[in-house]
Length: 331
Image 1 (cartoon, rainbow, N blue to C red):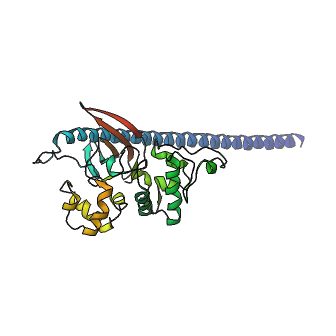
Image 2: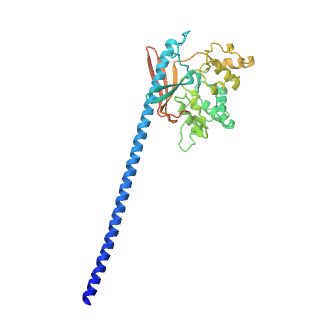
Image 3: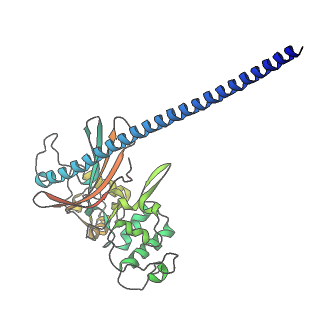
């Protein structure tokens, strides 16, 4: 009896040890599976990140190629812009912001060039043109007066503020105080220091439908009060007194095939509008251009965007005065 009890106890202990060993094996297998799955997930994530990085770098290089193509076309334009006959494939690119594209490898880029003289120079602009431009891009009218007067106060040399404007006393009362510059703007981004200006107004926003910002239509490089009607986008044209949406479309349609040499020669513009328009415009270009390029891979819809502003000098020389990569460009 004692032997039987002893063997039963030994059997129970053995079974208990086998059960513990089985649980330990199951735990070890579970831990190993978790480790394997973790390594697999990490490897997959790193692979996708590497591919995404590679794809982004390739699109960036394609966009940079687009910027260089734009500069090359500007040199070509300087030589051949007055030619009477254009051969297919050797057309002179327009500098009114129209879009051009070209394939490169398994991708392609889009490029647009805008003569800075076709934009509103915030250092020389009249308040009426600036007000109209802000309204045209969707800024609420009650905000427009504050922004325009504050811009004018920011750059004028005195400390007297306009009806809706502010001077240093306002800016010094802010949590992070600073003084009004009382001098010209050096960059367009400096507008963010002005009362009433917001990143949404300056850069635009994406909320269902993309909304372009003021930065697409203003400059500090034109050095002119007048607007070059051969290069101005529709929003800028509509900022000129006397230019309705219909008149703006008439001007844009005319310059698709013709260089405007005299605004009075453009058919379809009412005479009463011409008298209002004439003091605010010119027809001559400048040597400073903004170039926007977007690089794409294959059939992908999203691309890498770059903005640059270049000054074309003599002897095939140029210099950058602005370069942003990546940039926010409507695609």
